[in-house]
Image 1 (spheres, rainbow, N blue to C red):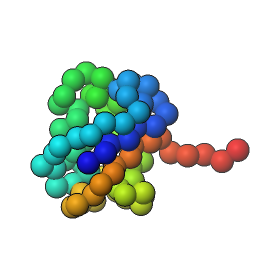
Image 2: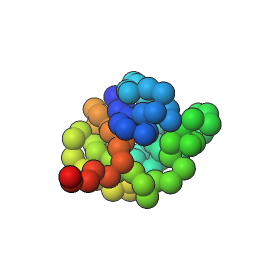
Image 3: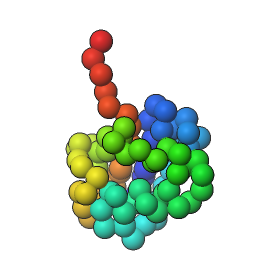
Image 4: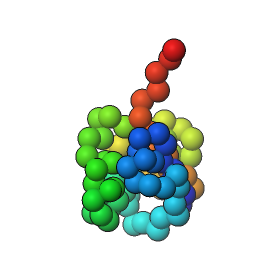
Length: 81
């Protein structure tokens, strides 16, 4: 599946997107897999309360199932201005 990173998440990881093969059942399972990869992922996902996630362009919670998702995006909360 495609995993997309936006704003400071992208800056910490150093990639805008990547293809990830995973056995994760939920978004949180995927986050734990990513954190274990290396320090830059651990830093990006250190505080998930500062993140939002979308599965196939639908905003979801971190306990949401991944199922047959084609895309998961991680980004900070959006603010108006």
